[in-house]
Length: 268
Image (cartoon, rainbow, N blue to C red; front, side, top):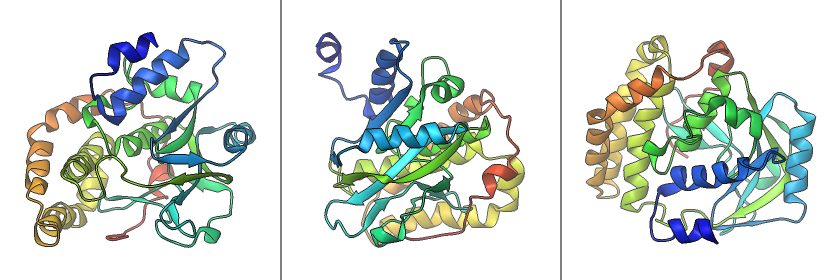
């Protein structure tokens, strides 16, 4: 109750809001796992038990992703983890595909924080000060950034299809609301400069340029959303923040172990 009284009148976004909860939870030394869960989700029975069982099976797992079903059409996947494209666009793995296609427990690049279990020791290793999710991101792509940082220090992510959660999707701002577009486009750019090696950026520069321009043009032409221009302007105007944070990221793993999960994809 005391914590709620302090923060109830302020919107800190997904990143800081979850950080507050994580910090409070980790004060209890018995806590081994943290689960993040969106406010527009419903979980199946034994959801948590199955996530924990999966985490115990994989000692090198920093995060475990359940099967996230799209509530608007329960036959389809909403997310089975994060897929990262060479053009710096992140995607929800399996988005809008038949749910039965995703029944295999396997390693993935990273987890969608809309429903994810994180191991305590993994979060503590990648924490910067008292931040776990990057609070400059506010919302969107903060889980992509976290997935990279977990990978960089050697933690892996796994998909656990036996744990099921139903997600309505964009219940707060809508799928094409101005905040959704703004934070997604701005933060895509920040993830790249914060986490990707310079050699990768140069090698894939042609795809990245097409993507950066294409994100803006797509939203201007098809969605009539001028907020896309502001998103990219703000991303580059404040790039110094990410470049400063880039120097603080622990990098132990070989990038090849991260890059092997990348694909080239443009649209869902």
